[in-house]
Image (cartoon, rainbow, N blue to C red; front, top):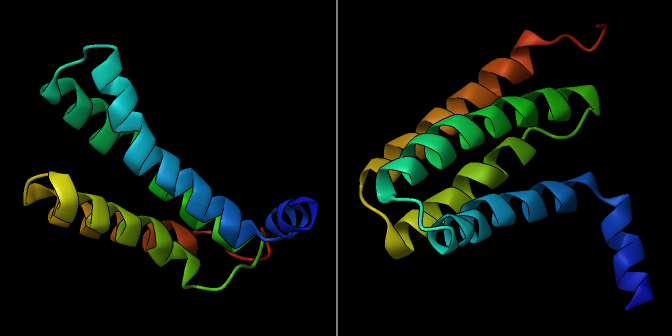
Amino acid sequence: MKNLWKKVEESKTTYIALISIVLVFIMPILFNLFHLGKSNRIIWLFFVINIFFSGFLGWFCRKYALSFYNLIIFPVIFVISVFIKYGRYGYFLAGIYLILSILIYFLFDKEN
């Protein structure tokens, strides 16, 4: 178990996947536990938090020179959760997350 955690610490891709899983699967459960409505979940979680994370993900991948496929991890995990339990609007949001990550990725140069 200790070796497994050591491998997780070395990989930034694993961190991206774990944070994505928390945002996509755990946060909606927490919103329900605190009795926040569906509209609050959609506004705060899907539009504010996830869009902020998408921008951060683009910057993070560029800063640490991670491969381009790391930008796809969060939208793919989000599409899986949408397929399981949310409406069709989630597919469009996944596209927005991906486009925003790509735009931020190309906005920042490696020199800066």
